[in-house]
Image (cartoon, rainbow, N blue to C red; front, side):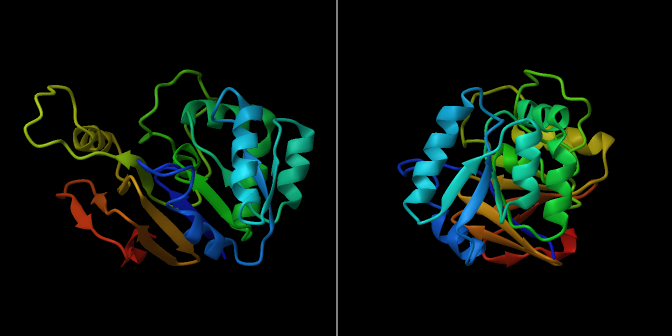
Length: 232
């Protein structure tokens, strides 16, 4: 059974790293007390891993950072659970592809290893990274991601501010552009929101809602807690 906890963001305004989600994370992990961490979305991976390690240590959970090599593949192949951190989605996916970790991560998650993602780590749980907000600072071999869920996700979803004078595309406009070329549902996941996937169940949880976009239809507003099983 696939077990995923997909966070829109790792830090809420006014709170510390993962503070808004840690209760849900510990519940999700159950008795797991050791996780592998994938820090590839940021350039300073050592510093990123140290930050995550210290935060999870406060909860009695040991964290070991994966490296983009054979040792990293071995770690992911035997890990009790994995946390894929946020940053730049293009850099994350490219590193996973180059290192050969992408198929290992996919196989373990499909086999039931708990998968925790935040931001970029949530993006790559979708079929592709076509709905990321990030700039393509590197070029991955393809846009194909893990495909752990059959729908796309747009973390950090932003509504247009009332009275805004910004004349550029809104997040909704960008997603509508995606649907001009693709027929895959998109979950616009606001800050503080998360998706918990357990087998054939998808629940919207957290402190914020989401917007569900489908090709040829108007977006649907959803508030937590909500069952989104139809997305599967």
